[in-house]
Length: 113
Image (tube, rainbow, N blue to C red; front, side, top):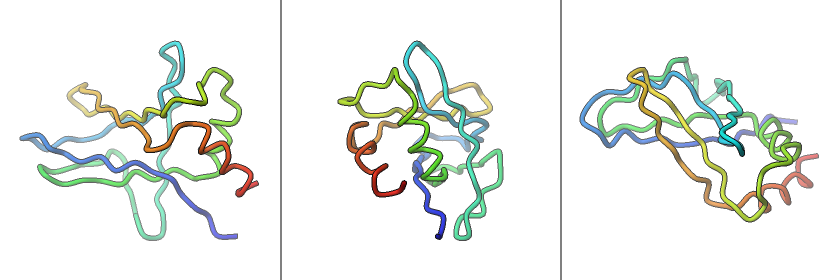
């Protein structure tokens, strides 16, 4: 079967180029699940990721790895959205919440496994 991906679009709405050096999913108790983004056939991502002013970048993650993580992480609340974060080389953290709550993604695991 063909590999599928989930991902996050981060847009640079500031006034300087940013260089993203790390990417993670926030977990309870200030724990981070660090994500190693993957290059895809249509998105040859190289790390770190440069994002110019008023540009955006899609950071992909293997969908099965994402679903495995959220399925096995006991501290996540099922009625809450997930928060993805990136940190740039200046040390600034940017956060992005998912469109759906965790429970919706867990329901999707049945479709993948």
